[in-house]
Structure formats: C-alpha cells, structure tokens
Image (cartoon, rainbow, N blue to C red):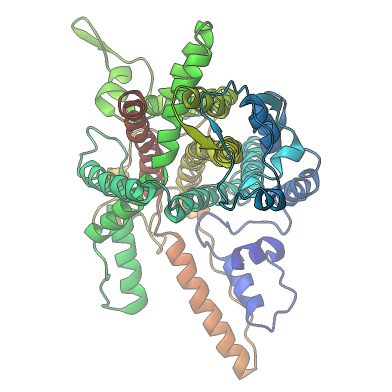
Length: 558
C-alpha cells in the first residue's frame, strides 16, 4: 500500500502535518532502491497506461478474453455423456420402471441401473462453447490468471518501448510490478491445484506430491553446491554480496548487533522453496507427458506437427542447457576450430541470445496448446473403447461420471500446461529488467553511497558475471557515476510543534532504514536468483515429464 501511495502522491503529499505525508515526501525524495527513483513524477506515463490497462482488463473480460478464446474458439471438441435412455437402447432394454411400479411388481432391491460393458457406444462430439465453459471447475480462476498474464506482458512491452525514448533513471519501471505479481499468482495457482490433489480421496496423489517434493529437495541440495564453472547462475556471488550488505546495514542501524542468519540458512530456505516448486510442478509434468504421447498419435500422418510437438516437449531441456557453461557459453564464445578457438559472439550477445531463446521456446509451446488439450479430451472415447474390451456390467451413472469428469477437468489441465510457460516467461522478463535496472545505479551496492571497495570486504565488481542482459534491439544506456546518480535525502522543514518534531524524526528514521535496506539487494543477487529460478522450473518439468513418459508407456498399460 505504501508503494502504491508513493506512485500516486509523489513529491507533493496533501497533508504535510500527518505522519504519512512526511513519510511519503521523504521516501520519494530519498534514494530508496531502484524501484522508486528520486526523480519520479507524480502521475507518469507508465502509471497512466497501467491504470488504463487495468480498467480495460476489467471492462473487456465479459466481451473478449484470451483464456476463453483458448477453450472456446471452436478448435476444441468435447464429448457428451450418453443419457440413460440411449444406454438402455444400446443394451436392448427399456428404461427401468419407477419406484412405485417396481414395488408393485415385487422388486424391493434398489440396485443402480447397469448395462453390459461391451455395448456399441459411440460418443457424440461438439465444440466447446462459452456457455459450456462456465460450469468448468476453476474456470473463473483460470480466466483471470491467464488474462492478467497477457495484460502484464503487454505492460512490460510498453515499458520496454517507453524506455527507448526516456531515460530509465527518471521513472520507476512499473512493468516490474506487473511481472512480480504474475510470478506470485503463478505460484498461487500451482498451490491451488496441488491443494486440490491433497483433498482428493481417490488414488495416491498426496503420496506422489510428497515423494517428488523430497526428491526435488535432494536435487536442489546437489545443484546448490555445484560451482559457477559448470552452472553459471552467479547465485553464490549474489548471496555473498547480499549477506555482506545486510551485515553492514545491521551494524549501522543497531550497533554491534550481528546478523541472525548465515549463508547456509539462506541456502536452506532456497532449497525448501525449490522443493515446494518441484512438488507443484509434479502433476503438470506428468500430465504433459500423457498429452504429448496422445497428441503424437493424433498427428501420426502429419510429420511437421510431430516435429513441433517434439520441439515443444524438449523446450525445458534447451533452457537447462543454456545455463550449463561448458556446453553453451564456452562453446559459443570459444568455439574450437582446429588448433585455434574462435569467438562466435560476445558475452552480452550470448545473454541476449539466451533471453530470445527462452521467449521463442515459450511461444512454441503456446502454439501447440490446442493439440495437447484435444489429446486430453480424447481420453473419453479412449476410455469407452477400453470399456468395450472388458467383460461384465457397469452402472449407467459410472459411465456418465467418467465421461463428464474428463471434460470438467479441462481447465485444470490448461492451467497445468500454461502455468510453467507463464512462470518461465515472466521470470525471464524480470531477469532482464531487474538486473539491467539495478545495474544503472552505477556500481553502488552499499547504503552509504560509497564505492564498494571502501565498504564491503568482497567488492561487487569482482563478483559480477560477464556481460549484461539486454534484448539487443537498441543501444543500452551507459551507467552513470555515483556522484551523478546519488540524490540527497530531502528533509522536511523544521516545525515549532514538539509533536511535529517527533513525527519528523520518526519519519526520517523510517525512510533512512527503508532507503538503506533497498540497496542491500544488488544486481548480482537479482541475476543469480532469477537465473536459478528460471533454470529450476525447467529442471522440474524435465524430471516430472520424463517420469510421466515412463509411467504412461510402461507402467500404465500393465
């Protein structure tokens, strides 16, 4: 709420005598991190566009929705369950009599109506319409989440184009806020779906989630001890830099008070987060493997479609390899040509190539979404064919429930398919923007605004990874010197009122602490953390989807 108020009021709070007004004034005037620079205007162009996009998102939802278009564009066909009369007609029987007639005829048992399993049942298909989609489970959550991700991407594209014309240091990048919210909502959606599995009483979904959570916990512990010579996240350098900055900040604020956590505890917290993300991505990976196999069978006579399906399935593998230094950066920057090595591209060019590769791979997976969803919907006729090969009888209600359940679950399957794509894409956008925006501060990672060699035992420039992230479409602005970028803290005018002086002192103390804390997190930290999260999401998809391939090809048929 405080950050939003800073956006709206800027430098001119309306009630200077209150506690909030001096706080906003001092906070806006101080250098409180790179989210809100000191030169921020009252109602900037980005804020106006952001409010306009939020209004359009609300007003256009009943008329046009990208999420609704995915399901209701006419490209997906659902299968209707047969009525009781149709099933009994196929079985050569009439509809059972009512309870009164059954009692008059001496039939007292109340058994469910059943039909032979080998009846010649053919399901009727129909395109999914908007009216049909309204009854789907989690449809409203799915529509809001996907539409918000689309509008968030639009706001980010606008801010990137806007920064081509305006100095990035003059206004706060509001696209960062939209991307952060999208990442938060993605994790929330994953947790909602996983909670649905935990509440299920059928099958061992809860056990599967817990088993994979423990398995991903072990993988994360192994990955975090790998050196940057093999996995070039720069996470160790970022955590070290943040730890040193935080220790210096606490010593200045509280004297000799030592930091209560260590780098080991920070890594353990990160391992716990990785385990949670892996558990959330378990069933999306298993479902992706199933729909991939079924989609390949549907496109058996179309080799181009099969090639696209294989490429989209291998998307996480390519993303993982982009951060394996010996076979990605070293190979492109020092390509062996006989006895000599040739540099194909620079460090900055490779980082740009990495960003564009992830964006293109996400778009590729998005392009084949209808193939995967239709393959899932075709589980209904496949189950009917399997039922025909079995002996015995089956209740009418079970047939109707099994066919209806497949359709009602299609929104959850769509969330499981789109969620990793949206999370990966917006983590990549944040990786470019946060690392670049923080780098514009000019090499100042300390809250004292002193060059790092005089402040920290481990200088920031000694830890910095080669190159910086950019799209490569326009020249990047050069970093400014500390003297130019540093802005003094604006203090309120002295007041004769004693209570007013106390308020001003409190405000100055709070804003000073916020401004110092905002500089603890450096470009190294953002680069390392976001690179690792993007890479980890891809690893979770690889592990779960490969296990899904093995399960559906060898274990499920048996």
